[in-house]
Amino acid sequence: MESGTQTPPSTAATSPISRLNSTIAGSRIGKYFKITERRTTFTTELRAGTSTFLTMAYILAVNASILSDSGGTCSVLDCVPICSDPAIPTENCRGGNLTLVSPNDSCKFNPVNPGYAACLEKTRKDLIVATAVASFIGCLLMGVFANLPLALAPGMGANAYFAYSVVGFHGSGNLSYRSALAAIFIEGLIFLFISAVGLRSKLAKLIPKPVRISSAAGIGLFLAFIGLQSNQGIGLIGYSPSTLVTLGGCPSGARAAVAPIVRSANGTIALIPGGDVSGDILCLQGRMISPTLWLGVVGFVIISFCLVKNIKGAMIYGVVFVTAVSWFRNTAVTSFPNTPTGDSAYKYFKKVVDVHGIRSTAGALSFAGIGKAPFWEAVISFLYVDILDTTGTLYSMANFAGFTDANGDFEGQYFAFISDASSIVVGSLLGTSPVTTFIESSTGIREGGRTGITALTAGAYFILALFLTPLLASIPPWAVGPPLILVGVMMMKAAAEVEWEDMSAAIPAFLTMILMPFTYSIAYGLIGGIGSYVILHFWDFSKGLLRKFGVAVVPKH
Picture 1 (cartoon, rainbow, N blue to C red):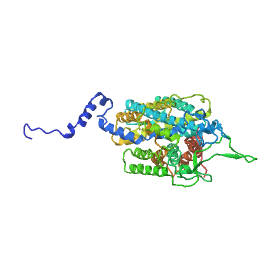
Picture 2: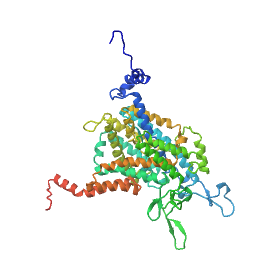
Picture 3: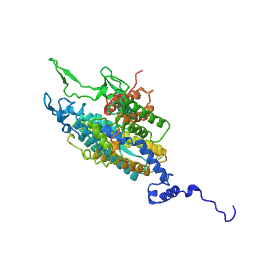
Picture 4: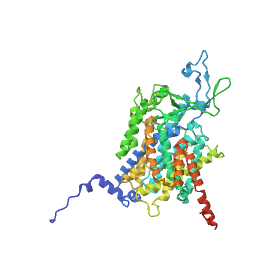
């Protein structure tokens, strides 16, 4: 090299992005988050956080839709009197044999009372905001204190158990929505204590391995089953009086509600005591011709293609496409039919940007049911699911990011446990089901996320979503169904880890998986799996116990 000749600086070294990354890395923020130590950059972390949010943004609409199926804080008191002839508006209900009928418990079920339906819509808007705020707080805690690239939000599976098993559809379960939130609050405090004293990982190891592995696959099947139905999905599955389920897909006008009835000796027909009128689940004619079904199928194909091609944000692309098509009025797939309910929903939708305050779900806890067995059953079930699901996800994500050591421990482990346990308590106070670490965090890790800045970026997007409540509240069920089905697909990979050649492991695993969707209960699946495991291994347990006390067990020849 000649004297006085200087090598020109590289373009990369002098680019604004490189200077920004260097400045942040050398600052207090960069040193706190260990950007250089973990071989990442500030812009890489931002991109990773964006990818993580795109893959889990569906939770805003899906979680609110599932939890609103519980009825929330809505009750019979929200129902309004209707005319004895439902086709006649209340204000015109007079003269002849027309009378106003006072609402009763049946007003919560199809045909849903207009007053109750309006309350449900308000609850769904509240829950969208609650989901966004709870997710933001969870991401904030994980990012700042644990410094891990893991995003949190109300977990899939736990929300379904909350809505359909604990509270029941429109409050038909053993616990009220308010009592169920109190159960989550207590479970969160117990979980926080367990995490603080270091018992969490040890408790997870007490659950039989086949049940622990297969529970994820069972929850996946449960979610897919929900996504295939009409109330919360694309409507491919319908009711059959002979086989329970069959092919559906008929238009809304060709579906009918189903109710358990009893015929008395004089020929009169009445609803069986304790029975409920179902949704419009019985296809009368026209199977597989529902326009919304086929639009949902298109959304399914879009998401599937994106997943196959490893395109980031696959879930959100399918939901956005189906939702955007459904927002046009006067079409066969519109979310806003020409009805009073449709008109009201469209009026709110047109606001586009609106900061919706939580009016009914925040602080809605009630400890009135604390002395009942279902209350503590819910506490134990939520605690079990959180110990397995959240702990397993944390370890798997840490391992995927290359953080774990030879013992399986990782940096920030203690504060990660504290962060997600604290998020459960916060979520219950806001009115949502348990908050957990999302497996979709793997997309951000794949993009290079290695610090808590990834989690903070995802959390910032959740705050931005607070201003778009009118749009998020207008996402239809047939747009939500495809992500539920495909989340089920992704969760099924856990079944590959089951030792199917060993029947003592295969039987409990299979029962765990199959009972969850078929009994519409995650708890029953867990009970079936653990119970069968104990029975099949009872002799082995007995032999081990006898040997412990010095009693030799000689096998017969």
